[in-house]
Image (cartoon, rainbow, N blue to C red; front, side, top):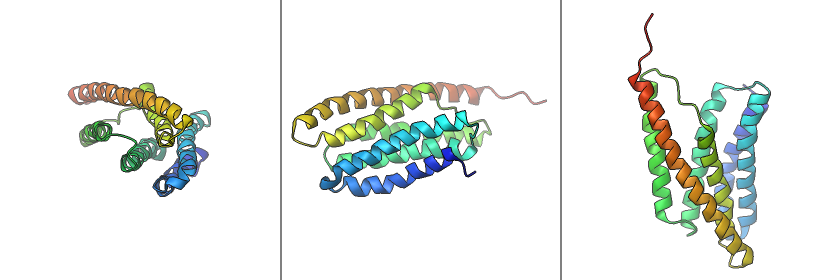
Length: 185
């Protein structure tokens, strides 16, 4: 259970409260952005290393997407408190995650295998994780804040669109797996 990928996943988890604490203090935006960047990097490397080192685990399968959701939830709440994103972004992301949680629960109750994360699902999360540091940096009233605003909203647009599109794909796959029952031998 104690593997490099799982250690990176746990490290990413520890970054969530640290990010919240830093991001709520406007003087610590640089440090908060650094924590977000490290969180995004560890999200990428934990999966990459798990596959390369053949250290995939059930813990990683469950913890990785859960921690992604927690990072996203913490970040959008902080960004909303700091007036960096509108409420509609939060509502879309939360509605998608609630719908996915219900689907996962139904699939689990039926004893079916969990849905596999797709490349587009990872891309959606990466876009959002790239967007958030830019949106936090965009709060600075200078030239790099303006550039960060442009990049932040570009990544946010792609991330939200992919987040919704992948949910539709996951729902199709999930509904099909619920409808098709495995043959009993």
